[in-house]
Length: 313
Ligand SMILES: [Mg+2]
Image: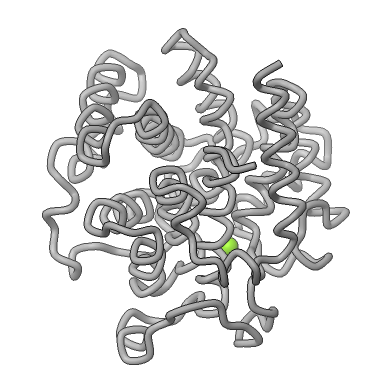
């Protein structure tokens, strides 16, 4: 059965899998030899075609936990299980992990609470919480209080990325996703997200962070030329790059292939953009061949169905 949940899950894991084989490759190199589909067995990860990475693994851990309602400790425990016991890995191994995520999970394993485990320094603002946050939107759809919604987003980001900048990036991304779920088109959803986020955070302790989001919140990120869009692991850059790909393309495939072609953190940019593109264009818009190549496709669809039923209950 096709649903928003399965479309989003396939959308981000396929974006992730398209990017994995060329992670760290430069934009110039990818422009010379563009990626057009699922490839594999390339350096540095040497994985078969269709292999998704830590981004999707941790998103699936979150989704799995949300099948039993919202419980921060349970989300954190499943992230530890991924690291220690290879839970929700594509082929039984963890082949990629970010530094801040690694240290936070290490603290969780030692018994630190998930409200205290995340990196809090300004330099710990990689895209590691943004890349795993999308499944939360389906739970948030049912949460009517705006304060509660943003509080939950901050908590879930904070398991690994507790600096206000990472939390705000997750809020912007999920607010956009909520508006797409409600049926708005891309530009309406983007504008509404800008208004909502500025209104909410203007009188919030994180207000001083808003200056870092000026290009995405107070301007139109899609107006920037490609050479001013960055695709490294800094959370602001990843958020900007993924919105840029989404707003300037008109099919699922072109969104994710554009994201990969930006280079560097190809898997994460394509996962983050691809999740929203999957949600917006629907499962049918994703090329059949890519779906068929995806590792654990049936498990992913089962998880989407379980999450859907539990949210309807
Ligand atoms: Mg990755």
